[in-house]
Image 1 (spheres, rainbow, N blue to C red):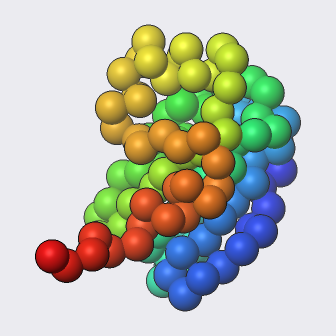
Image 2: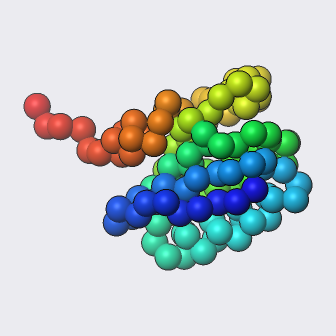
Amino acid sequence: MELYAIEVFGDLLVLRADGGLNTGTSSQLSDQVTTLVQGGVQKIVVDCTKLEIISSLGLSSLLMLHTRIKRVGGEVKLCGLKGAIVQVLAITKLDKVFELYPDVESARLAFRPAAKA
C-alpha cells in the first residue's frame, strides 16, 4: 500500500490509500501517522477509493491512527470505501468509530465548523 498526501489545508491532510492495508503495509501507516502528528496535523481524511483489501492488522492500524489523532484533539474521517471493506467495517463496528463519507470533498467539508444561528 502506498499513502500519498494529496492535499494539505492548514491542519487538514488528505491521504490517499492505494492497494491494501495489511501486515506488509501497516507499519508504513504507523510511521507516517507518527510523523504527521508530530508535525501538527489534527484532521485527516483517508481517501480509500483505491483501497482494495484490508486485514485485521490494517483495521488495527486505522484504530491506532484514530487514537493518536484523538489524543491531540484531532479527528480522522474515511471516504470512498466500497464493497467488502464497507462490510468489514460494519461487522467490526468500526463504522461507529469513524465517520464515513462518499468522497473526499464531503469528508473535507465535514471538518468545517457549524454555522452559527
